[in-house]
Amino acid sequence: MGLQGAPNRLYRNRGDGRFEDVTEASGLADLSPYFSLGAVWSDIDDDGDLDLLIANDSTPNHLMLNLGDGTFEDIGLRSGLAANADGRFQASMGVDVADFNNDGLLDVYATHFASDYSTLYRNRGELSFLDVSTMAQIVQPEWLLVSWGTRFVDLDHDGWKDLVHSNGHVYPFLQTAGWAEQYGQPLSVYLNRGDETFRDVSRDLGEDALEPTVSRGVAFGEYDNDGDTDFAVANLDGKPQLFRNDFATANHWVMFRLRGTAGNRDAIGARLTLETGGLTQLWEIKRADSIYSASDPRAHFGLGGESTVKRLQVRWPGGRTEEFKDLTADTHYLIEEGKGLAKEFP
Picture 1 (tube, rainbow, N blue to C red):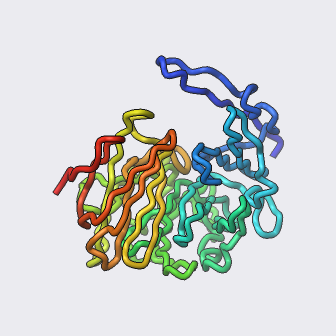
Picture 2 (picture 1 turned 120 degrees about the horizontal axis):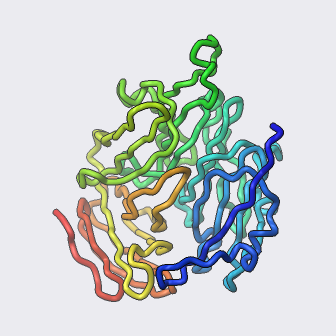
């Protein structure tokens, strides 16, 4: 309270090792100076260019729609992402974008401050989003938490993206206050049931995950290359934590590393559409996500009981599309733009 917001800045990579400040030219300078924290690039409207979602603390979130000519239009209020279902602006911090219900549309999750809930927005198409947090059954566990780094990630390989986020308060006096709100807080993990609801499994993850920490950023990656997604947590005034995924499951998985040739080398912005027996999944390649974090850019898919990928389509930055069929599960693949697909391991 009483603090002034600050403007954001956009720097365009010129491709010659230098960056150009295009804040004015892009239209971002027209935004009100809010309290921006998390930001993620994503092709929200599936038109081949990246839009920008900005999470703002106690002020309206921005959805900057890429108009394709170097400029952006803020449609946060019109899209429904600026506020929650009550029309109230929340203390947005971490944010991620993915297709949690496998309907081919990208949804949004934003983490928030205590005495509130983190918000799941379902994409209804035509750039319209609905706050479905209550229907998804994730509201009540959130009420005392101050939540930060987050991501949609399929932890149990069933083909449905789960939710993970870190927690930790900002008021040190809570260490001795005796309040219900605690300074150190455990992780939150919600498993996707596949029916647009989630199950809170935070208390089933072992004593390490239950340890109260003052956590902030979370980076997700496949550090041991065993097929599942692990994550590292940065803690304030404490040691960082590396959590290895040991979910016991017979479900299959597949992972893809993309290497761009015509565009950026990590293929940031590429979109992968994967089909198995009865499920179609979507994934976008990105590094920066949520808040204070950069994650493994490889695309990970859980396949459930399917041992073969029926079809994979890759849409590269720039518009080139490639298709691959009948891929073996439980394999890491490398796809080079215009040069095909090869097994990396095993």
